[in-house]
Length: 142
Image 1 (cartoon, rainbow, N blue to C red):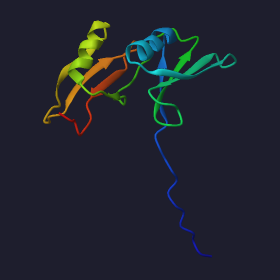
Image 2: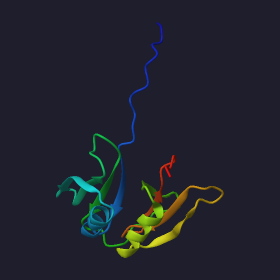
Image 3: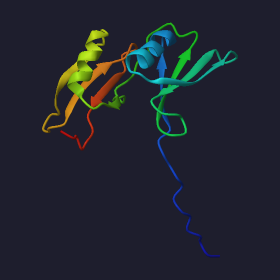
């Protein structure tokens, strides 16, 4: 019997799921402040949770975030020591940071060049404490 070589499937990153304690507050942050659109919101009454997909482009066109709201969650979620951050690309980290400060967004790192590098980065927190990196395109046009 000969072994058939299979071609590589067309993998692509679809979404990242994070659990949120207050869905309305999270949706306000991701849509009003960060400018994402709600693509799909589905309630699962028997499971007592809601999944909402948000992003800048449609679910079939690119990567989005799945916000999972468990209806009976009372305690804050613990992210653990394996969690890193989400990242959002912006054209100007400094100008974006000023905009976010006007909206009361918490910064964990003010905009500055990356450690041992030149790329400008900043880090913010969403309402549930998830860290979000702001970065500029790798080939920044001046």
